[in-house]
Structure formats: C-alpha cells, structure tokens
Image (cartoon, rainbow, N blue to C red; front, side, top):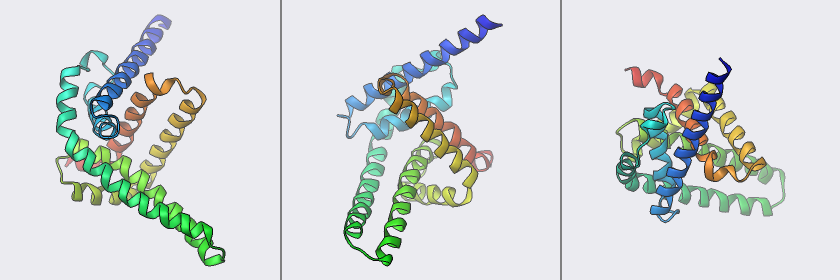
Length: 199
C-alpha cells in the first residue's frame, strides 16, 4: 500500500518534470517571447489528454500541437499585451494624480488588470478545448469570468499555490512549476466548460 503510494507520487513528479521540460523546449523553439503562449496552450492540451500518464507525452505530438497553436497563441498574447499596456499606462498616470476620484480610478484599473490576466489564462484553455476564432474565445472567456465565479476562485487559488511554491523554491520553475500550472489551468477551466463540453 505504502509502496504503491510512493510509486504514484514519483510517477506524478516525473510527469510534471517531463511536461515542464517540454514546455521550455517548445518555448525556446519560439524564441521564448513568441513561444511561451503556444507552448502553454500545448501542454494544457497535452495534460488534458495524457491525464497524468507520462507515457502518453511524446515530443512529436507536442511539436505538432505547438505548430498548430503558434499563430493563434501569439495573436492572443499580442492582443492582451496591448490592452494591458494601455491600462497599465493609465494606471501609472492615475497614481501620479492626487484626489479621491483618482484613488477610486486606481482601484478600478487594478481590478480591470486582474480581470485581464485571469481572462488571458481562461482564454488559453478556451482555445485549447474548442475550435473557435480569437474573437469568440475572448467573448467566452469574459462570460466564464462573470458566470462561473466558484470555478474562477478555484483557478485563482491554484495560481496562488503555484506562485507561492515557485517563489519559495525558484528552481522548480524549470522542472515542475510550468507543468503544475498547466494542470491547474486544465483542471479548473474544464470544470468551467463542463456544460459546454457535455452539450
């Protein structure tokens, strides 16, 4: 019983290491900047299909998925970067200005940035699970944020856990954190889309 538990733990750790290393390999193929988003989409999809079985993770399959996700992933990244930069610049200006109105504006802009980051993560999963256009995926991700509050909080909780673990043990970012992040995104967002997937 104990040996079975140890074996399962080691298998899952090895699975996360394998997934994480493949993520970084794909990211470097895309020169990191253009590789990170399609690589994350790829390992989220792979995690959903492999379901903790490291034997299912094959470089050839991942590379094919990466090529399919490359264009759409970078379109998504560029769109969110532009919006975040615009909101971030407005926040920077608002922080320099004193007054109650601008204090309220600061909190509104911070909340908008938070929604954007969460929406980006949900969008990764939308493009992974569904064959939709970028515009439709943006709409669906925003709808999920406002209609699936419980699942969103679970996703946020998972992201915080991964962030804290990575902060405490920075070396894990290369070997486990990205694989664990893919697992959190895949599991949390699949609950959000459960009704849609069933239909």
